[in-house]
Length: 125
Ligand SMILES: [Zn+2]
Image (cartoon, rainbow, N blue to C red):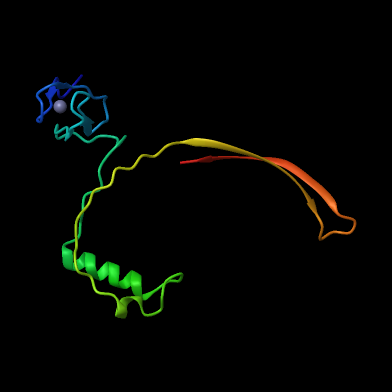
């Protein structure tokens, strides 16, 4: 049973195809992405992470990041001035992949040295 029978692109009017479980669909004619509003809970297959911070909170998060951690100048927070703040949504994809590495080398810390070789296979998202 389908809650929503047909959705039309609010940008170009073309019918938008979507699969059960999707809450956001992209128009295959113009690329416009819209939210499918049915009021029903869905399993998220692709989604959007909405901004929860106002500009003041965002600046405080950046300043806290500047004050701690490593691989940045110790005076970064004091020496920098934030002159502009823009909200930007970035698309992201989660892609399951299996990576296989084969290796062979000489382990010289042992006497006599030992040749080691093998294969490492891991799954990543
Ligand atoms: Zn469209």
